[in-house]
Image 1: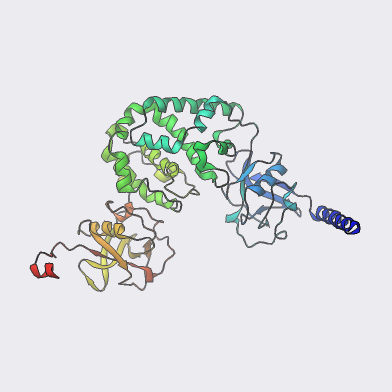
Image 2: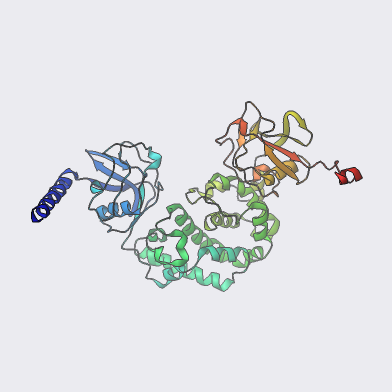
Length: 444
């Protein structure tokens, strides 16, 4: 028994020596544009060449090892490909660390350079910045505030101005404190996990995009909105919140809607602001606040990465934004189609095309029927009138049924789809000339 134990120990020592010998000396760095010093795209130096790491199987345990190699200690998080794509070699794939290794080279993984990835899957990480502390009272107030609830109460008019003022005072104090220490609120990603009010940003599930957008929202709220609270408050106390919800589907949570959803929904948001707010409050700052809320309220995919200024464009007038919406027309087509039923076709960019049935429901049909002059009563049914060719203009359409046009509904973007014409939508609209008032119809 003693000999067996000695032999096992000897084999273990040999394996450790071999593992050390076969783990090459490598270096890591953080790269990417517009990044803090403690976050970026993870790059690794091997065989005299810098390369990237594929995100397949990569998680926070692997990030902790990379952060340790960078000198930040063992506290870090994986933030998908937030800091963009690299180029050249992809050195590592399917990395599986325990979190306690001294180097990524010591983790389980594929062989160096063996991968089935592309640079759109390059890993980004966020490491703990020891200079950034939440110990300032202002930061403590901010991170103990449930931003989701704060925003919802603000928009539906139930947040008193004194609570908004006290939150923004804390926000400004926290920002100044962090700035003096050479960091910003976005550096606190790995620190907020202990605050239950920010549980939607837990490190195990967090994406840097949503965290940053919520930080951007708080900056906008306290820099551009709170200072003009007396002007905007009557807008909150109007029917704006309900209108955004009922007409624009504003508070309907989804984790899969892409950024393009906001590109079309901004027209609905702007129209509802114009209809429900005083003229002095109908400005771009109010529209920005509503769009920022899409991240806070989890209306769009957490990985959505979009510049709100670019999304809105150069228009400072909400009327101009509403009128910049694509002017489209619709028609019913197909063999044996009826005046009120057929394949739905839409005219965009000087071409007639179809609509894919992915996610298409009766609410979407109601908007199409409204555009056709039949009122808001319609039904969708499966590819009854299939088209052989031509563009498929819309996919993953999301309407509430109260929009003025399909162009105002959420969708993947014009011409962006994963459909074939066998998925073309057909609809039937209510024909007001048809009545069931005849006694025989009543019996039937």
